[in-house]
Image (cartoon, rainbow, N blue to C red; front, side, top):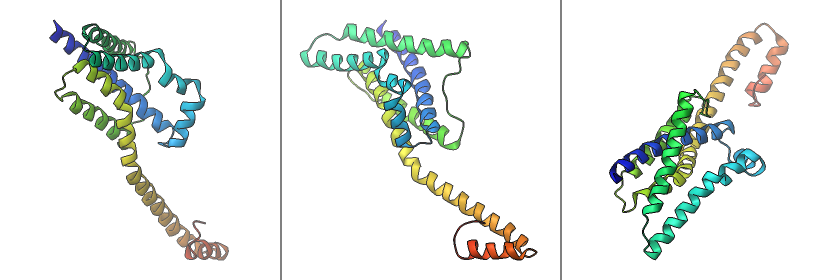
Length: 206
């Protein structure tokens, strides 16, 4: 019975992890992957504050710390295991319900960056899930709470390549504008003056 419950809990857990990953990547994407903009959203908006202080979020933290207290005191964790199983069965069922009802939950615009971050986050959770741990139900909560940290790590890892890509695109665009501007300047003395001033002197575009 407990093995079957663990499998059902695992399914609900991963459905929730996938949905939550898409939500957080979309939120970062809508804030242009900027820490300052996201921090303002989390601190100064009702929606942002609810992400960390919703009843479900608080309940998970209470279960996590309560589980630790039980392990410290040597008390049986059977009821806590059932509570955690019920939690993720409920969240997995909610994800299925939203899918059946075609509920448009938040998900990022499909770009190489957002897809890669989402896949890597879920993949690493799956790897950590496979670790042999003595308290698997407690591990569900730990991985759930770690998800945001994993997403943040991958976002920062992609920050430098993204900046390099944007810089190369800007340089390519400037070169293309410069080519067309040079052709146009052949027939317009005033445009030739502007071209020499802005491009040859390294001041940007026309």
